[in-house]
Amino acid sequence: MNHKEPFNEAIKELILAGESDSIEFKSTLRYDLREKGINKKLEYVIAKTLSAFMNSEGGHLFIGIDDNQNALGLDNDIETLSNKSIDGFELQVIEVIKKYIGSEYSSHIKITFPVFDETRICHVKTSKSSKPIFIRHGENEEFFVRIGCSSQPLLIRHKLFMKPRRRLLGRGNNGARVRGFAQAWSCDQSQQL
Image (cartoon, rainbow, N blue to C red; front, top):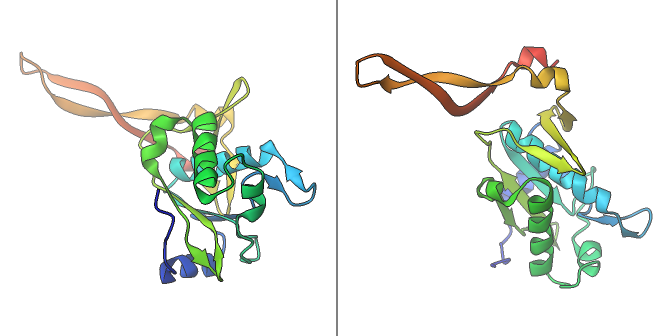
């Protein structure tokens, strides 16, 4: 794993633009700054944000940046890990993705460690998924989308409007049109608000 990402002006511009429908800041991965210890609920919040990005248009999650765009870094989180290194941090992010989202969606996620304000942070870039991404939380599955600068659950009544689009796949042996389900999903946005 290569964690030596040089200063990047594009990263700085993303952070200074502030939170939006495609940018989110999290102070930590799992270290609770108030309680001064591990809080596994924070890992769930990370997964929720990533799934919301993938269910929307993709996005950028910055870990080690607070809501006021201050660089806090990753040291507090790293100290909670058995492998106290950037490698260990990346492995923990991957474990969170596997636990809540599933490793089959890792192709939509890229993890890097840029320097911002002379501090190493984590940048998790996600792309839009062609399939709906559900979060496994206990025995439940939850579906999140980005609305403005927050990740919002899609309520059950809204899930009814989430349906696969049908498309023409071609003609059968007898010349008849053959239809099937495409991999793309559509969601009637007007029904969500």
